[in-house]
Image (tube, rainbow, N blue to C red):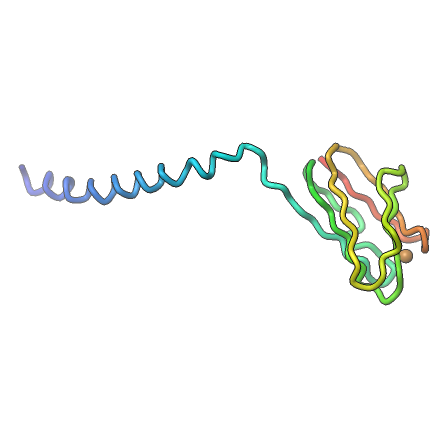
Length: 119
Ligand SMILES: [Cu+2]
């Protein structure tokens, strides 16, 4: 063996161990073919929804949190979802299973509007 070959042989073992560790780790990554469930947040503050337009992938659970000092609701214009009155720090969540545009408003203050775009 030349010096160079000995050096390569010495390097090969740690490289192979590293590759084995990588392969050993990958089944757990591949075990779940479903995309990870995603979450998104809308904050209600100062009589507005933020962001006013939220764009998310299909399957996303959107949680609205009322950070205002007064009660609000989250009501779908098309009747898809409807929250109860949410007091300060109360939340409402909805999971969007289908693509589309979902406009909504606050039924207490109908000028408060927002929309969720699901792609
Ligand atoms: Cu309101």
